[in-house]
Length: 310
View 1: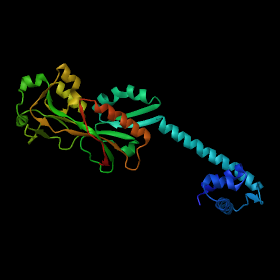
View 2 (view 1 turned 45 degrees about the horizontal axis):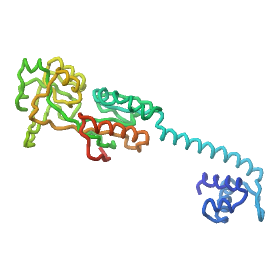
View 3 (view 1 turned 90 degrees about the vertical axis):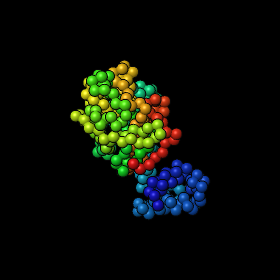
């Protein structure tokens, strides 16, 4: 029988003064309570209680063991309360990971609202355009834009991200503006290597027929920020999530081209370590961002979210 349960029963018997009270509390019989105390005595190899017809008294060993039981049970209760407070007050450190541009534009600006809701929370944000190893880096939850590659992770779909072909006015003035996706074969493509098949740009016509173009260019990078700067410098054309260029589009520094053709969208997921059940803290923070993204014009929310293995 579980040692902790026997200890709790023994303490209750000592504090109540009889077996019948404990039996009523446990919804059992006096005989069953007595057998629990006997089982504890057998495990310890010592007599804890001297029983009489109407009462019992502690032996010297029983008195010593009773004090130790109180210390153990009090420590366990304190630990339970600490865990409860940590979970329900959302205090302590939460380690997040995200692509660089996504973190800059979609996570950092929302930190004031996050801290207003969870004032005791501390965030450690790791920004990297490569896929961080969650286990090795001790990451609690990561935002991933694009198709998932690691089949060990648990994923939750947050929405989809709209993409577009984008270039600067200076580049288009110098090189001309493509009118059809096939025209991209004759332009300098700025290739982001952080996704699968980076040279394959897919568009959909109004009839929803896919148009796949293999592009080439003289600059590629695994950093979306580096690609953005190259676009601003007029080096070439990119195929990118619109949210990276929101301010640039509004300021006229870049423009969307091939607007009649819809590029394929990218999934937005959050992923968790496979061996770790998401805590209340993780679920609450993910829920916060899920609410925020639902009203973000750059992210198309799903009608419902689901959990799956990546």
